[in-house]
Image: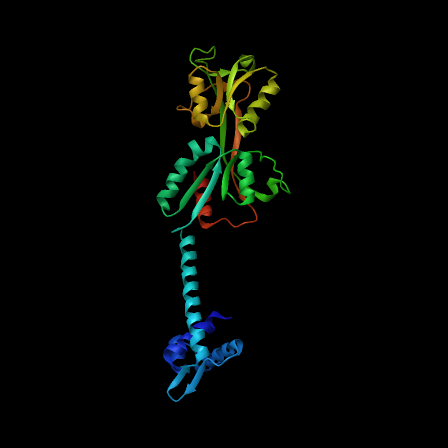
Amino acid sequence: MDLSYLRTFLTIAAEESVTQAARRLHLTQPAVSTQLSRLEEEIGQPLFDRTPRGMILTEAGATFARFVEDALERLEAGQVAVDELVGLQRGSLTIGGGATATTYLLPPVLGRFHEEYPQIRFFVREQSSRQSVQDVLSGDLDLAIVTLPLQPTARRGSAAERLEVLPWATDELRLIVPPGHPLDGQPSFDWPDLDGQPLVLFEAGSAVREIIDERIASAGVAVDIVMELRAIEPIKQMVAQGIGAGFVSQFALARHDEGLRCVRDPIGREMAAIYRRDRTPSPAAQAFLRLLGAA
């Protein structure tokens, strides 16, 4: 049903005249009469009685008018709501990411975004890259910050084929050691330095843990993993208490020269923003991705 016909119908009802309705709508009188005839044909009932006093609604017309008024009001409200979303005057954004992203990298970006778009509500989940990939694919997250390469999932098709991947940040994992440790005060370490040493690491299965495990295995050293934790700050606290050495992101350190770099090859990782390729990002997500690219 053509919405313009419905608006013409209500205008005729208000003016009680095809001629006056045509003037108000800036249409010709024949055009208005044609629209009304087609609408009555579609409804299957006459909507007006043509009388010497003008166009008077029939009982069917009066009944139909109430529903048309309600429908057009709701459509106009829907248009306003969409305009508000596009204008970022309302909406929400759900983001996932690991400890480094949610604790150190995203807060400044989120702060700038909130300052510019204070009406947008945020939901931020700290979780593994693997879980973030699954949640973006399922639609539970609008986007996520993950460590590359993408973690495999049990869903049909590879994650890389179904996701847009926007490289965002390069990170370096550095070794932190307790006070009095043989490496305390040193700028770098070599893997044999850790042979037999107690380590406090991220939980098994996390992207950072897989990077560290791979490097330990390649170096052929035997370390003693005495504790596994999910977050960076607890790792730093346990290291400070002398429980063992640990690896954390360079972004978690107070100074750019803090932490020991691997003397052979710095332990780097690439971080990226991901979202579903087959879904148009919401206006809020699009604005956030633009800000993320400028960060």
